[in-house]
Length: 155
Image (spheres, rainbow, N blue to C red):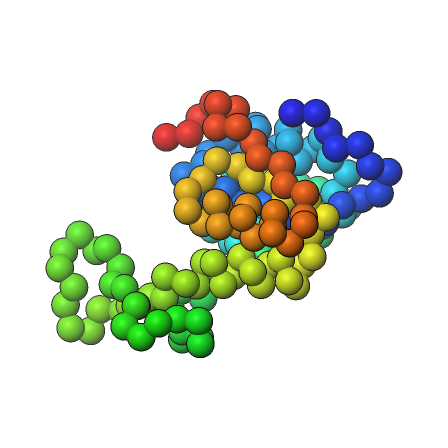
C-alpha cells in the first residue's frame, strides 16, 4: 500500500475485525502515514493493534478510544424487544445480561461525528467494519481498505 501523500498530519480512524492479528501490517500501514491522532473502538484485533502502535509513538501521536456501550440502555433508534443474550454456550437463563446490538453502529457514528477523521483505515473485518466503512463513505471521509490477503497471520 502506498503512503498517502499529504504534507499535514492526519487524524486517522482505524477499524477492523476482532480476530485480525497481523501486527506487522497494521504497523506498516500506520507508519506509512503522517498521523497526529488515532481513534478506534477499543475492541480486540485491529483496534488493539492500532492502539499498541499509537502507544509506541506516544510522543507524536495521541489516541482516542470509543468503546461501544453494549450493556447500556437502548436509544430511540432501537426497536422494542431487540436486545439479545450473549452466547454463553448454553440457553439463556433468568438473570443473564442482555446487550444492545445497535451499540456498535451507534459507536461508529459517534466516532465519525466526534473525532472527525481525515482518513479511515479499514483492516479486514466483519459487519462492524463494513458498517464503519459505509458510514465513512457516506460522510465523505476518505477510506483506505487493507486487502485481506495482506493479513499474513489471521486465524
